[in-house]
Amino acid sequence: MAKQHALYAQSGGVTAVINASACAVIETARRYSDRIDTVYAAHNGILGALRGELIDTSQESDETIGALLRTPGGAFGSCRYKLKPFEESQDEYRRLIEVFQAYNIGYFFYNGGNDSMDTALKVSQLSKKLGYPITCIGIPKTIDNDLAVTDNCPGFGSAAKYLAVSTKEASHDIASMCDTSTKVFVMEVMGRHAGWLAAAAGLAARQAGDPPHIIVFPEAPLNRTHFLSKVRQTVEAKGYCVIVASEGAKYDDNSFVSASTTVIDSFGHHQLGGVAPALCTLIKKELGYKYHYAVADYLQRSARHIASRVDVEQAYAVGKTAVELAVTGHNAVMASIVRESSTPYRWSTSHVALSEVANFERKLPGNYISADGFAITRACREYLEPLIEGEEYPPYLNGLPRFAKLKKVFAEKKIKAPFAVA
Image (cartoon, rainbow, N blue to C red):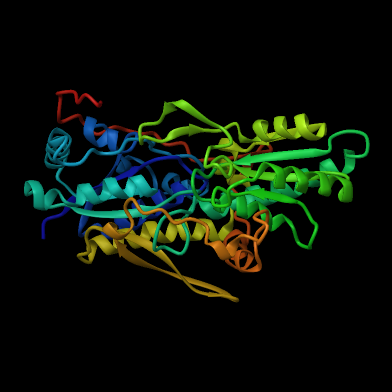
């Protein structure tokens, strides 16, 4: 069989460990040099593929590629762009084939979350719809941990660890100051519809009554009266109250606690954010307590300095598995993680059809949320704890982490015509 090139792309919000998957794809492909020639990386995800902007990773040394293992962000650039259905935008798909043919691309690896697996599925169907043979493998990534079928998603464990650590540290701060200063601290975390990250902050509580005292999940609608009563009771009993709230939190009338009604992203999602100040305003108005809040935002998904070792290992493993699946004849599948045991924690990689993952969203199970809706259960803790285990620190130089710096040599542009992205 004649060798073909591979195209790897990163998509959606990046993580502290997505580059570990990139590292694995490139290193593993180099070991299969009898099947895969050059690995190109699309600049800024699927947009780079459409624009014919491909980075030649063969120009990077083994040492530089290896350093991706400990580098946060998306080394090759990411994007939020979802391919339209084939019937609505055949030009996109014909352009992809034009680029694939020009660069002799036979393998496509797409590293992303829910919407990204939808894109991967659509690309995998090019053979049937337009007659171009392409092997397409999805590589899971999302701090939201909401991909179906796989036990967990690379990127989540490190964000979970960061949030649990930050909640624990901030709780010590407020406990020190609550007598004469701040009574309430609210930390806002990501999570549009699924409360996995909010739940992870609950790992900071080791005993009953430990902070966080209240977790606000998207899956547990918030009753204002119940919430304010819990805040008052906690301050009266503990002297302070620590709250972790998901950006996707809703009141019991199904309205978002805070969301833009006008700003919509390229995936069609309303821009979320502002839950922490909204809750603090409510608390100040109704209870009068002094407050502080923090918005973890990009910090939770980029904190490579406190990444989970398990997460790093799993991010690398799914990248390696993706290449192995491709060269052994699999297509239209996503590499996945299988939990074999929680105590002791054992896991392995497998694969699942992209059609079983694309556009499905896994929310926090009901038995992971306490009866009052404000805490995690033992079952949730048993699921989460193994995912934040271990530390895998990056190397440091002059007191700061040292990350990979790519040359990013672009392949010769073989398609001159620009492609307009709507």
